[in-house]
Length: 197
Length: 219
Image (tube, rainbow over all chains, first blue to last red; front, side):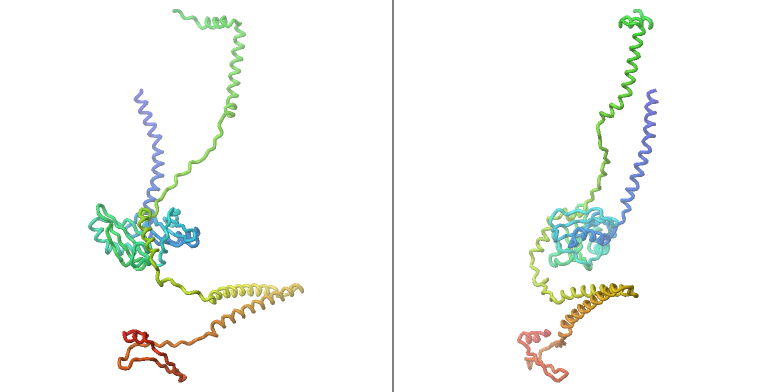
């Protein structure tokens, strides 16, 4: 009698939970698939909406920094990019993170960051990656199983000889070896220098 | 031990209470009715004692997305690089001359001209709609509009005169002569240029000019 009761209860609980698990799966599967299907984009794709938002925040805001906010794929595109703007009038910097044409994060940087404005002419992240992957970064990727970790667009900070240049900086990482840094001229994609560190 | 029948027990209870059976029955009935009445009143009493609560929906947890991770992790280094940049002198780059106030005034003149054009267009439209003037009042308004147009024309004339003074009165023709080469036997001290009308213009060369020509430069 007691065995039958326990069995009956177990059976009854199983029947009761099955719809709940099914519902959970129904809820989780689309969200997981959505994460995988997020359309990656090159860096410039999110610039317009970020700039529009920045000008609403402060009309004198200008772009000072761009970085991938989610991993970059082999085509130089990422699902999400971060765009940092500086307003001399407000003396503040504000970042807009854009995914699939929508701003998903908008926050002030919380520290002083007075960088020079990014020059208007710069080649996009996909073109930059083709240049670096096919050239100077190729041996590192091949020998150390390295992969591109970060791409950032900035002006003046990493090019000491000609700080007026806007540059792309690519950071390749690999297990157990120092990272590879590649600096390219953002105007024409020319490799300016590289170092390990 | 013997067990008393149920009828004996009831009789025992009646005897213990010191009442007759009918009295006991009446009291029992009263007690049952009172209990039923209390049961009916209890929900109302509970409602009065209930605690007032406010129902709110749990706010969904907002997804916190990291952004600019490399910059934040290396901000000290990057900020130090920018600090170095600001300490360097820019030299002559970036020096700007004062803007000629006439050029600033042209913007204002252009705005005024555009405004005048809009005004004239509106007046013209109004005139078309007044093909038949109905009253003396309309004629008076027409005269006012013509006055406005006269004033606008006067404004245009004054702006044109300013432009004319700035440009037509200051026309200059420039001739640029480029020199290269240095004759070693007869060093050049001056350059003479004969114009179409026969006039001759002589430009002396300074020592710096001659030194530049001697080194292969262009003057």
